[in-house]
Structures are given as C-alpha cells and as structure tokens.
Image (cartoon, rainbow, N blue to C red):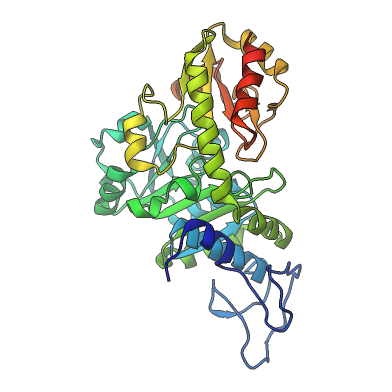
Length: 387
C-alpha cells in the first residue's frame, strides 16, 4: 500500500517483535549470531536470504535502516555503510575494474575528488572529468564509459545535474549512473526515478540530521545488491549497530526537517541576494541562479544549502563569520543547527588552488547549511554580522 513520505519515514522498515511489544527497532549490538540457527522460522538477512551470521555481513538494526531508506528513496534495495565515503568507494569499486573508464563531473566533494584522482588511477581505472554544464548539454558519448558519476547538487557551488536527461542516456549507453544526492536528500529527489543505477548519501548529513553520527547509504535495484554487498563485506565499511539505530531515529523526521530547511533556505537566499555586501548567491531556488530551470525539472524542493560570495572577499567573509551568533562555524551540513564554513579551509582544503579554480570555487566562497531555527532570527543574525 502506497503512503506519504512522513508515514513511510515513521513506519517502514521497523522491526517490531510481538513478544516484546517494542515500538522502535532494538540495537542488535552483536558481532555474531547463532549458526546454524535452529529456530523454526529464523529471521533472515536481506543481503543473502539466510539467517544472520556476522554483523560485517548484515545485522537486524542495519537492515531496518536499509529498508526504511529504500522505501523513502524509492529503490529496491539499500545498504548502510560506516560513512558516506565508504558508500562511495565500495559502490564504485564494486562496479569498476582495471581497464574501465569513469566519467565524472569535476565539481565534487573534496574527498571524492581525491579518490578519483589519486586512488582509482593507481588501480588502472581511468577517470575523465567534465563540468556539470558540459554534462547537462548532453553532447558526450557515454558509450565510452563503464560508469558515470555525478552529484545531483554539486558541492559547494550548488550546480544542479540534469538527471532527467542524463539518466535515460546513461541507461541507453549501458553505463552505470551513480548519483551522490546528499545535498538533495530523499525528500527533495529520488534519482532512481531518473534511471540512476546507484544513489549515494552521506547519512551523516540530512538523513541523520542531528550532527551526532557518521553514516553512509547506497540504494539500487536488486541486480546490484550482491556486488555492492560483497564490496562492503570485503572492505569492511559497515556501520556499528548504534550508528544505524541513530540513523533510524533521525530519518523518521527527515520530511519535517527538510520542509523547514527548504523554506528557511529560500528566505535566506532571497535576503542575501538583495544585500549590498553580497556579490553573488548560489541557490537552486533563486530565479537568478543559472541552474534554476534545471532545478525545477529535477528537484521537488531546493534544499537547505546556500553558497555566497561577499564583495570584499576572504577577509570580509572571515570577519562576518566571527560575528554570527546563531550560526556556528563548522564543516559538515544537514543538521538541525545552522553551520557556516569556508570550503578553502575545510571541505576543499586538500585541493590545490588550481583544482578549486577548475571546479569553479572562488577562494572567498562561503557555504551555509541552513538549520531549522526561525528564519526571522537567522536573517537578523546575518543583518547584524554584515552591517
């Protein structure tokens, strides 16, 4: 039976044991399980269709999270990982081998970029980079590549990938399309509806929502389950059951939080766009933003991330950030609290200035993760800090 996003977020995937009457899935803090399991109807691990044996292979708490996430992201199957990077590396290495070619957008999260430029080439996997604009023009011959990798909303310049066109072209070319949809969240976008083969999320961010866990998630069709599960089992990027439990708790309110963050970000973006000290605002929900038309076709909501530049550059940015009272200076994003950072100091600090320039990241770019505080208070905080 189909149901609304919030209903599925609360109800789907929960492991309720009649004998105990528990309302929330328990934390199965077990390394191992009885083997063979001689009970009459043993519970089975969805990754193998057999009774649970060892948590690195699968665990009931993890499975509850995976089933709930799969329902929200509208995919057949899902796996959880110890971090977003574990989800990315395990999924990519499950699908590519020596001699294969990967096409990626060059506007990437810094660690993903390092993985593609400094690890994959050493493994004999060739990686070609193009801009999101080039990819959106649909002129690239995708048949030359075993896989295509993109971020649905790129980090930190917030360009929007045109999955509506890319997905069908990748499917026709026989290329695996992998989409990091962390900035969108399952509330604002389901890449599988655009023919994405694998959807990736840093569950640390919007899915967890409370800045208290490190978690990754990958969703896909049943055809991909065995390959990606084997990669996770081999590399060991499995989350602790407690992290999975906290992810389960957080994801239940994803719809409520994202609705508030979508609305807050729209209000803040409009305020910043009109401020005399601001040079440029990067936000998919603004009509002035170059990706707005693409965003309207690909997103159900524009998200809680804003990037912007001040007219007086890096010194002004550092000064403003110190004056903010509600917004804290910290990396990461997607939590209920507002966070602000300079990517040159945090998420993209490991890249060279030339690499950042190629991604279109100005040195003075400020990235702002909008929380669920009252938008009036956030605007007032920025008004005083920019004065």
